[in-house]
Image 1 (cartoon, helix red, strand yellow):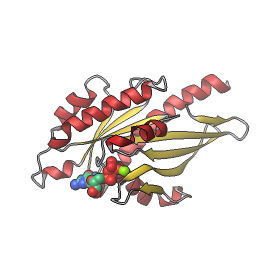
Image 2 (cartoon, rainbow, N blue to C red; image 1 turned 30 degrees about the vertical axis):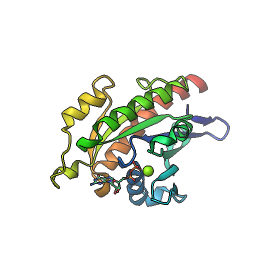
Image 3 (tube, helix red, strand yellow; image 1 turned 90 degrees about the vertical axis):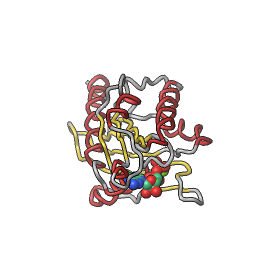
Image 4 (tube, rainbow, N blue to C red; image 1 turned 45 degrees about the vertical axis):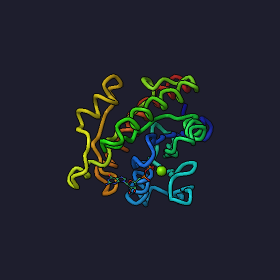
Length: 205
Ligand SMILES: Nc1nc2c(ncn2[C@@H]2O[C@H](COP(=O)(O)OP(=O)(O)O)[C@@H](O)[C@H]2O)c(=O)[nH]1
Ligand SMILES: [Mg+2]
């Protein structure tokens, strides 16, 4: 649920990049950080382990300007992927308004993607949130690996595995070179804002 301050006319929206470890969540935020230098007033915060993996989260705030007289700030978070960090993943999901699920198209990651999505469902459920109701965008990342002759899953298979029932908007991506990072971001912002505007309308008017 977005943080809405009616007095100061500010809305704070939380978007979480979720998915299996090493799928490319941090890489998405790093690219966004580069691409939107102007709109980003605060440095990206990354808390990493010694082997450069996300320990708690990466955090990146940016302004999208006023919407219906409200100043909107979007906060982007990632979660740590390692299996042992589920308590942290759950905590990062607290108060989430929109989710990008970053899946890894490598064949060897197939089960990990599905497990991560199942866990997302359960973690949301612990906050009485329904994955089928929360604004969601799918990203099938690392499609560039196909050219490197690394076995990857087809988009049809990714869709069948992860999105057959959810039917969320989905993007193939190559986050390392920025491919479809911004379209993914724009889509999640768009669907999340639509949902937050409904809340605003209900609460304020
Ligand atoms: N080939 C390729 N590698 C990627 C891509 N996106 C991320 N990676 C690499 O995958 C590894 C894990 O990425 P990271 O963003 O840390 O994953 P996270 O655990 O989900 O945050 C890093 O070595 C990235 O450089 C991509 O689109 N293509
Ligand atoms: Mg990370």
